[in-house]
Length: 463
Image (cartoon, rainbow, N blue to C red; front, side, top):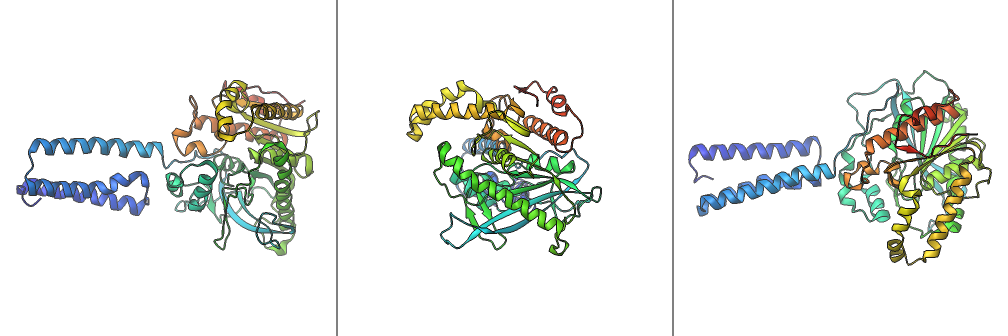
């Protein structure tokens, strides 16, 4: 660079200094992102290139060609990668409340952990409570996923989705804040239990959880240990997803018992904490144990349906695209309000048929076993839609549309899918369902919301 004329040399030095400063500020303020790697090394490449040009006195046309080519690649990569793997934001919740959150480690002394190498070990869970607050710290912003290395490692194990591509999720912020005071507007807040899908995690539906809490619900999310992508305990111990090769109705029906017992144990714990002042629970006396609903995705949605049958404390249940594993649903349907949200790709037989050859090739299972699975799934869904059941489908959706997952990258979205609008529909109908049937705020709330969206189909009303 020192062989250039003074004016040109000074301009190059100033330009490079600005680039180095921008890189330093980005890392300090936002944190390292793999998508920005080219941006991090660009100043170094330009420095070395300038030195090489000055020393070798390369021809000007080659210099211009090299700089132009690098600039094009630089712009494409620096713009493209952050768009494909964004640091996204969650929509601002529409309710009147701010959102507080706390996590707890609980141990069920009445159950052994059947999947632990330590045969004397009891079943341990991590739960997270989101609750309404009237205060917020404008300077405090909690990460969406604090345990990002463990969670992404679990996702990779489950979905073969490279963990490093999601390492930036620790930079995504949620609206919930730790240790806020509970609102005094209500002495008995209704409770909603949330169960993730098989291989999911308790925060996987943050878009939905925060919206419900902003409208006055307390939500309790459960990590179902060994079936969650990862569970990280307060002492730092990590339990990653442990694939158990469950397949077919028989094994998954039987496995459901572990999940429903998890939920019942959480309810027992909440009852104890709520009633015993000596426990020192910050929500003591604030939980309305007579107004409890449950919602879940996939296997967690099936768990919500099962709890409607098994535990009288669960008054209503919402199942988001979950095959109804567990004990048989009565042929007359549920006697308590139940809502089934279906993904279009999960219930469209033509889509199922089109993907069948590839599924058979990958799994080695027979065509008849897949056909039998489809038939049984549909029969169980039909039974669940009877009695006090709603069933609906949102167009252009697939299984993971009912989670945060499609926010991670537009590459994950379905053709024609507007994931922000899909989440808006899910939130409005979820809130309407719980308001109408758990809080009894009025009739027709779900139908009123559904009529606003042509994307919603196959909606049936409760008898």
